[in-house]
Length: 238
Figure 1: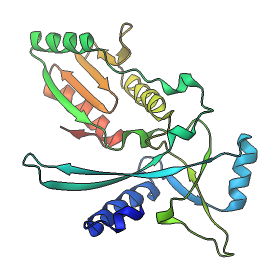
Figure 2: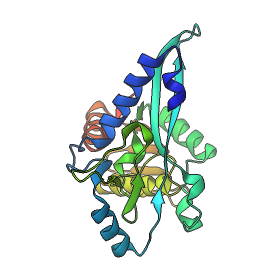
Figure 3: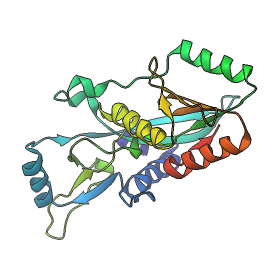
């Protein structure tokens, strides 16, 4: 964080950091729960007592510059991540999240072409934040945004939504997204859990982490799926 204040693009990095932070502490429209919320030291101890853990998660800033096709700086991005390298006590099973198999993708595309179906790609911005942690977690605020309570005691953060970098974030988002797609009347393919189908609507969905491919037999079906995805996860058409 300190390095960005020495960089010649200090102003741009500050905007990127402030934008990311605002998104994390702002309640989500779907349920009114933010990714991070301030808690007092007393509340921190209550969470530790409830969970049986006394571990404070570490948060780190990652910075990235997006370039346009000509190599010019297009956008400065700052992302606050959980330091997964410190999470050595998590069940390895929670770290695994399936992604679509390449042969499955080819089969879906060939089937869609054979049936003259429309194919549309979508992206879920800040995907992991749509799912919640498996247990309550406490984090120490990053140096950029430390805060004291009215008595001068350091305040902490409760992680209410999965952050990028958390070792279980991918798995929990996969489960969150799968549950939602099943609720729309889709079934998972037995051979590949990242392929979903609805024979009644003649619609197929392929999921690769936060990218979604929808093959639909008609515009009405595609629009209904698109509206549902947008309402649930703020999905954007690519």
